[in-house]
Length: 349
Image (tube, rainbow, N blue to C red):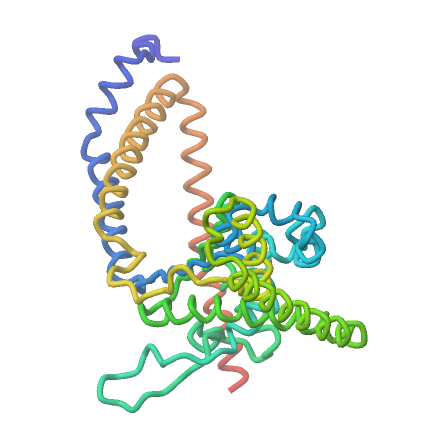
């Protein structure tokens, strides 16, 4: 041990780190240069955003409260069948749509859907391509390529659910602005279509039962409409009677329940003007901060290494000797392998 070496304290470490400012500056500059290069060469990514509400939310807005609808003795049976009572159909929950948007079946349909070609040159006739082809997945096996595309699309898609308002917000990233908006709108359309297909499928399985119930429901609906018409004819000044107002609201609810859509689109996706990624200024600022910290750590590591070498000269010499020998062996093996490969190729020729 070198007894003349000062002990390593924080001021000594700080002074040694500051004395290596050139190393810290070089590391920070290299990090910024790398970020700038990535900002230039990385392909742009745009984000399309669409949102919709489920049936349950629409009923809350139109009827003034599900609790009144479910507890009304006149229509409690209808509310239960539609999932508005205690035995609510889980397929009407926003969480169901969140799972549906990330399902393999829906993503496969979206990948096989056709959209305007984002790489089309101006002046060329309109052409369409599948979303799968825009991902440029190179695989000879179509099924494996589709499986890879589903995983990649699932990472590019984001779904947020607000349980208080039953609002579902869908975001989808793509390489072009128009494609991002069209794909997001197509995903929402597939949700509605897929949901309707499932409802029709369940209805088909109970065809015999529903054939009789549909006729009865239609007759009931016509009876409700006729009773409401007769109600207005019998009670010209019904607004002045609280009981008649309540009855009118109940009659309106019966009509509204039978005409509620599956989902309601709140916002259709529009082509974004600004790309989502990369953002050059954000990347440069982040790289400058990270580069400065990395440069300071590099300079501090150099000072610590030098101090340790002064404290343990024999171990430091052994480490340098071993490292030099290993590097020479690696450098000698690589040219030897290249020469062996060239010799084998020459013999084969």
